[in-house]
Amino acid sequence: MNYVALKMLFGDRAKYLMLLCGLTFSVMLIVQQGSIFWGLMMWSQSSISNINAPIWVTDPGIAQVDEVKPIAATAVDRVRSVPGVEWAVPLYKGLLRARLASGDYHQITLTGLESSTLIGRPAEILEGRFEDIVQPDAVVLDQWTVERMGGPSVITVGTVFELNDKVARVVAIAKTQKSFTNIPVVYTTYERAIRYMPRERRTLSYVLAKAKDGVPTDLLIARIREHTGLGAFTAEDFSWKTITWVLKNTGIGINFGTTIFLGFIVGMAIAGQTFYLFTVENLRQFGALKAMGASGFTLARMILLQAFTVGLTGYGVGVGLATGFGVLAATGGELPFAETWQLLVFVLIALLTICAVSAAISIIKLARLEPAVVFR
Amino acid sequence: MMDMQTQPAAIRVRGIVKSFGAGNTKVTVLRGIDLDIYLGEMLLLVGESGGGKTTLLSAIAGILDIDEGDIDVLGVPLSSLPSGKRTAFRGQTMGFVYQQFNLLPALTAAENVAVPLLIQKMGRHDAVRKARAMLDRVGLGDRSEFLPKNLSGGQQQRVAIARALVNEPRLLICDEPTAALDGPNGQKIMALLREVGRSADRCVVVVTHDSRIFHYGDRMAKLTDGRIVGIEPITQEEMT
Image (cartoon, rainbow over all chains, first blue to last red; front, side):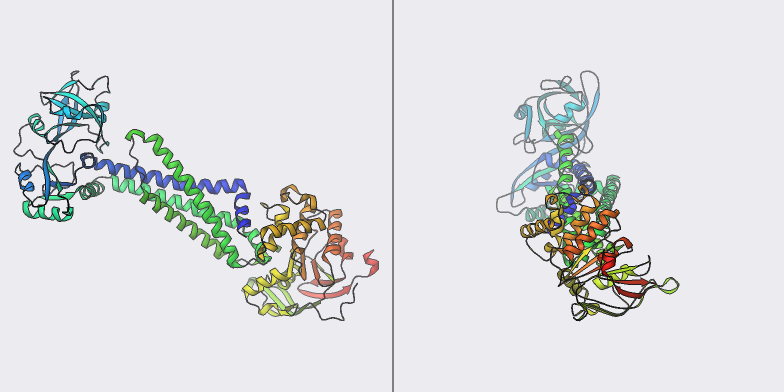
């Protein structure tokens, strides 16, 4: 009877396409909105992922990566002295205004890396050589800085501009993940970053560190906290801390969460209702089968097969369309879009659940159906 | 007409009562029906609309629970069978022809005819092969791959008859089989039912209000207001 169930499902093409469209739209809505939401969250912690260091040592009261609380310059040596540390380097991060030759001002995030190791440098360079950052007045921009400052015709490798009345010369363009605030990032050495910035009592933003081979990162983090009294996190934990802060302290969590939740409810309601209506419209046919001797189990199996077939097809097409949107609209990191396997599994389970529930409702209705309906 | 009443009845209906609704809206549709139906005969259930014909037919087919009384079909006390066993019994021993054909629109004629065999777990290949042979018997061998929407009303009803007979049921239940057809097509369908459906080891029960086809039956039971008011054989004169 599986064959009959599938023929019933596919046979009325208009009804099937309507059902498929409802499910596809629901899945696409949830996956697309969920991926944009998660993409935004990834942007909120891009300062951490762009640096790519395993351990971040911070002020103990740090809330999130972009809310820098400077720590004493001695923190680097104190961290280096903790048993199990492979290396520890300083990182500067601060906001500054750049003045172009045209007189235009742009706010930038200045990132200072330790000059001898350049730990924290971006992985991909689009133009020039990152190593040239050690040359006098050298800075490296990311691609978003170039875009925000007017494009390659305005600023490129070799362009000179000012940071706090001091000369900065572009030696390379790096590729990074866009940040949540979309403030461009300018890289230079740690020592030069401090020179560019106005005088402050404390200039060290973070200490980046790594555990020696064989030393568990969690253990080392506990030791750093104990020995230095500073905050210490794995990059992953610091990312989560930042994401959590963004969710709690900005409207994004509530607003986007509400949109996704409503999208989920509407999508699932459409999916469930459409399938339920499909079954109800076929009730007379099922009644005829019941009169001819099809057992309740057989009919239930047919309905479940129909539900899961159309559900999985709708899931596949919906995920495909959402992914296509991601590929087309978010190529190059212009739009936040992070489609994770966890989201896909969640949507799959939710969809199969709603298909099972609507199928169950239909099965109950069918079980109560007197086959005599076919004589009316 | 075969000499039927010397043998035990294939269907014994005794004192059945059936009501719908409750309280002020309660309507009693069957008010104590007694009826015997024999193998080899075609019994017509006739009477005015609302007289209880279709309700009685549904009760005999075991697709409608009755409030009181007993129905034995081929020696099986239908009303005391659990629902699941009754469904299985129906699938093995009964065939149905409906007023509105009730063909599955997505299936071809052959696939529609094969459905009762598929329900009985016959392989699809064998079921469709047997269904095609049955369609040949009702004169639709050349239409076996047609969808119902591409068949005329008369052809659809012939497909429905083939479907009802494909698993060789002992009891053929027909509810107003000619009501959705014009006069000539109705006559053809009844002729086909009599020719193909009626046999010595099968009884055919037909609900109809169409007096033009009464002569195809062997006996006629008239229902009025939920009671059988007369059962009479149909004479040879009526047949002609």
